[in-house]
Length: 351
Ligand code: KG4
Ligand code: ZN
Image 1: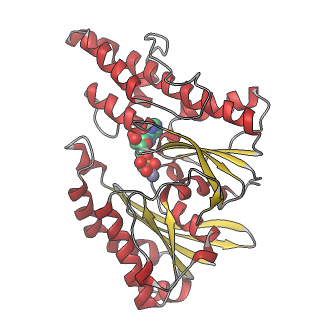
Image 2: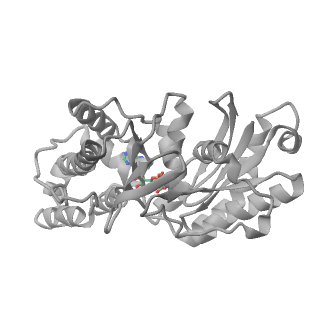
C-alpha cells in the first residue's frame, strides 16, 4: 500500500509517499518546502503570511513528490500508485491547515481516493515506526515541538493519553524566544544548540522548572525569563562574550528538565519502548542525554528518528496514515481542520 502524506500545519509545506508492505515501511519520496527564510524577517511565524506561502507551494510540492513514485506524470502516478491520502487535520494554524485539508479533499474527490485525517502530534510520535525496529507497547513518547511539550502514554498505537504537558511555553517556543532575546535569529532551537557547542553549560545556573514536582507537567516560561534577567544585568560587550555560555547553560537546563521528567515517568510506568519526537528532538545534546539517562536507569535505548523526520515533514503524516488506514473515509464533507485538536488527557482510542 502506498500512502500520500500532506502537511501544512505551520511553516512547512510538505508532501511524501510511504509504502507499507508486509508490516515494513519504506520512504518512497519526501519533499519539504520550508518557509523559514520568510519568517526570519519577522523572527516568528505570521499566520497570514504562512497560509499564503502554503497556497503558493502546495501544488508544486505535490507535483514534485508524485513525479518520483512511478513512470508517469504526477497525475498518472497519483491515479495509479496511491491508495489513500493522509493529511494533517490539526493542531496548527487554521488558515495553514485549511490549505492542506482542502487540497487533500479536492484530490480525493477528483481521483476517487480515500482520506485519512491525521493528528499532527500523533504523527510526530508514530513516525518512529518508519525505522522498522520493533516497537513494543506500552510505550512512552516525549514530544518536543515548537508548540507542544508532552509526555504521552501509549497502550497501543491508537490507545493513548497525555500524562504531562507544558503549562505555558513549549520547550521549542522557549528556545525560539531565548534566541530572539539573544539576537540570534529564527528558528532558535538549531541556532542555540549550535552555539551551545562552544559554551560552558555550567556557566549560568538556570532553573530546572518543575523537575521535582510529583506530576509530569512542564513549564518553560520562567526559564526563558531567567535568561532575560541575566541579559538585563549585562552590557553589550558582556552579552556578546557570554552568548555561547548562555546558550549552553540554557540548553542544559531544558535538556535536563525534559530528560529528568521522562526518566521518572518511565520508572513509574515501566514502558517497553520510549520514543522521542518533534523538532527539538533534532538537538544532539537532548538525544544523547536521553539515551544515556534511560540506559543508566536500566531501560533499552529510546527510538529517535533521524533529524529530518523530527522537524515537520510529510513522511510522518503518511506513516501515521498507513497505521491508521482503517480510519479512511470518502465522506469528504465531514472532514474539517481543527486548530485545537489536542491528544486526549484520558486513555481512549484516538484516530
Ligand atoms: O516539530 P517542529 O518542526 O514544528 C512544530 O510542530 O512546532 O518543531 C519546531 C521547533 C522550533 O521551536 C525549533 O526551534 C525547534 O523545533 N528545533 C530545534 C532543532 N530543530 C528545530 N531545537 C533544537 N535543536 C534542533 N536541531
Ligand atoms: Zn510539528
